[in-house]
Image (cartoon, rainbow, N blue to C red; front, side, top):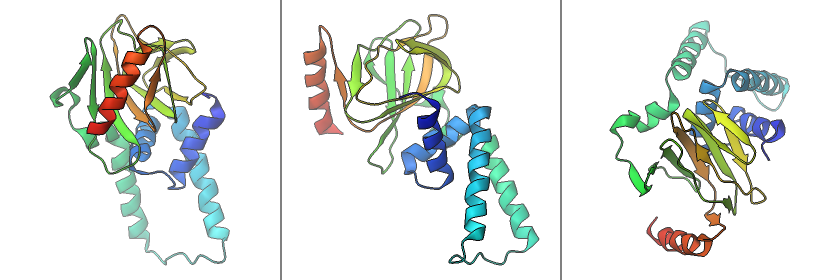
Amino acid sequence: MNGTLVKNQLIFDFASGALGPAKSIFASTYLQLNSNASKTAGIFENILGQNLFENENIQPKHLKYVDCINKENDKKNVIVNNPVTGFFGDLKELNWKQVYKGFKEYTASIDDKDELKLIKMDPGISVPLHSHDGKEYILVLEGSFCDEYGEYSKGDIQINDQKIKHTPIASRDRGCVCLSITEKDVIFFGKYGSVLNLFTFIKSFFK
């Protein structure tokens, strides 16, 4: 699920304006942190722009050159500023919620069906083996983590579906801070899986 195709689909959907608020923030942060992803987005934007120009059913507005300059300056400001801090503010000032020792999260207040949150894991902390009913998107903002499928550092994303089971473990040196989207609830496995799933079920009533 973490191949180039699924990552490029996210970038293409962002470039075409097809994403909701949560995934738009996620994707724009990914492009800001990952230069290769940003180049891919530029290619998609050029293709989409050319298709728009060649579409006889769409009449572009007649713009003055100064309008284009102003738009380009606005775009540069968006790229320079970190979308995460622009939306959440200073991460050090957030009122993090401790889920269990060494694991904290902060859920965004955003009107969207997708849940956008920040996750902070202390060095060496792990998440029990789990999967998801829907897709899970993880973008590393600081530090790194590893699981059964590899190691992920700043600017790397992981996109998982219900077929993927994994046990993320934060770097033993720096821990990690990630931006995350979960389309549906987590499903835990293992010794304490049933207890954790019950907790998740009860928690869903208070969202």
